[in-house]
Image 1 (cartoon, rainbow, N blue to C red):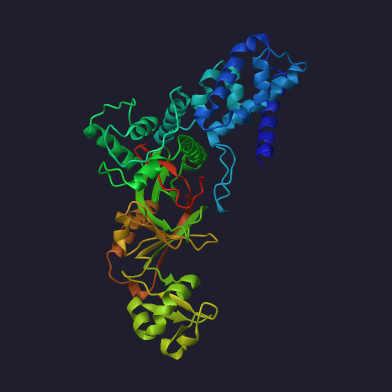
Image 2 (cartoon, one colour; image 1 turned 180 degrees about the vertical axis):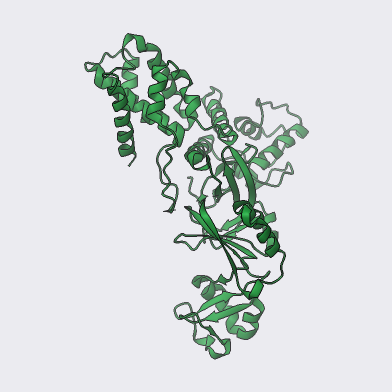
Length: 478
């Protein structure tokens, strides 16, 4: 697919060049500056989260060593194709699969890369093209800066892999000091550092890895510090390319992004983060699935239709002990296959099991409903949605991986009001009621739908641009 996309782009580029009577842009004597600038751009690929080998690497090496091509026009076109591929990746990130379900079918295309390249070469502004094509969001720049820092640390002559073993937080723990330097928390590996200063730096690291900021070294903190710099670079580059991939989508509309490892929700509009909320996502055994879709309705006072596996594995054992008492306490109804509400006393619960359970359990709406008082719906094959929750205490945890796959949102009401400003007063009024009007859910359509993406990024920037690393809870980055 990537090769096809590049072929189409390059055909557009060649059409533009063809209009200039097959003018060459790189090899003629008068184009030396452009060629050198292009090779400089390619050499910067690692600092941009890209792979230099993707851009006519062998040809560039040959030309750099004095190789004179026999077919200058063909070689010049090959460099043009590599240039288009490079700037396309700078603008949108390399093509890759980021999610299992892609309901948006989103392909970034907000820039005319061949046209911008042709224009820059024609008006002698090629040296400014990289800045023109790159995203400008502060979070993007923060990710890029972190990549530059870690790359610099890795390339230093005194670099050596470090593993922290001791939990001692003083200047005698040389591996700790070396690692804090490699990660940018210290400017030098100073083994005479004062303990108070060292603990301040440890607290900065704890914040970065989302731990309690008390300056103490514990196994979890040490484990995150011991992740190799190479792996951190991989996580940063993945995040950088995802962020640039989102750039076109968020340019002129609100986009809801959930990052699973961060257990955070962001609403982006242009270069701004207009809402940030903690969320609770799926635990490792029942993970949330990366996806893209559109939020198409908001439901106030929703029912909760209990997923079959939860009904038979978690609820059925309790129901068997005292059917009426258990169902009444949880405010559950029992429905048959046609959706009729049944009398629990008419069912032989003892005969039911995970292989024989022809019923649906539905929790009635209200403040104790597992979905809380609001649900934001979007189509996907995983029965995933965003929702409120009565169990607010779980948002206090740093590692918020507790759900069966759905996503609980701490600021669900502010999110709904932000996405539907015309219905803000109505949503606010309904959220203050104890019971649903007429005892039924209130469905509010969202038109046009709001893009929502559930992503998996271990490294991700906060709204203020601070880059943080989160637990690789599903072990996707190995």
